[in-house]
Amino acid sequence: MDIVNALITLLNFVVVPAMAYGSQLALGALGVTLIYGILRFSNFAHGDTMAFGAMVTVLVTWLFQSWGIHLWVLPTALLALPFGILACIGLLLATDRVVYRFYREQKAKPVILVIVSLGVTFVLNGIVRFIIGPDDQNFLDGERFIVSARTFREMTGLEEGLAIKTTQGITVITAVFVVALLFWFLNRTRTGKSMRAYSDNEDLALLSGIDPERVVMITWMIVAALATIAGVLYGLDKSFKPFTYFQLLLPIFASAIVGGLGNPLGAIAGGFLIAFSEVTVTYAWKKVLTYFLPESLAPDGLVQLMSTDYKLAVSFMILIIVLLFKPTGIFRGKSV
Image (cartoon, rainbow, N blue to C red; front, side, top):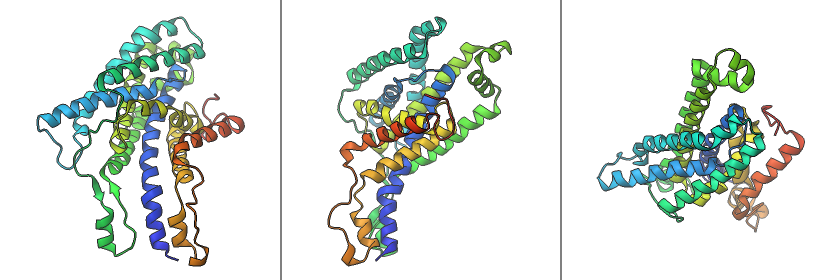
């Protein structure tokens, strides 16, 4: 029995990856929940919005790299990120002006807007694939690890090594900073309070003089920033492939619904719950159990509850359970 090596293995393959993945899902779910809370529809185009913002960032990163511009040990993509956010803001404001505004003025039902957003998804997906192609794109540079497994083993003398990638550290730190900034904006600024008032009671907000079009514009701008940051962090941590972002839609929506749709705190909690569930269920526990258990009880098989090929099924099952037994989610958001 070797508890220390078991804990290091657990941190290496479960806790650290799930923390990074949960941060990416939380940022994505925050965008979905803001749209649902203020514009009152489920935006199925959010995954491809993330892909668009990340694509622009990738292109600008390649441009900077060709000019010899780098950010020392950090990824150059962090320098290109503001350009991706600006492009994504322009895209979402143009889409709102050309598409969503018409249905909003017609006071269309939410289900109509959901179908419209599905159409926007296919258009965005086609644009991204046409510009950058459907394959994996590499744009990561800088130092790869904060701590490598070999360095950790040499420092501690342990059998197992702990590896923390630079992208994982950047993901968690960025997510904490962005979430803190968002909550400060929503709770401390006049515009943020107007958005919350509009979300709670649209008619009362209009009577009190709040400009609805300004609230909508600010909402799209925040959502564009959140989507681009989440998309770039995911691309740096895994890889940038346009179709992957469409597949991310399920865990992102599951995170938002499990936490409580329309509730920002719920989106964050849901993101980490979904991430830890996916990683825990699809991880092969043989090595951890071998360290924990006496040699005579060590397992022969992988002790993997589900193959990684079915990772998305975990989000789907959690989503079904929540919709059946607690449709308002953990933090009592709006019922789906």
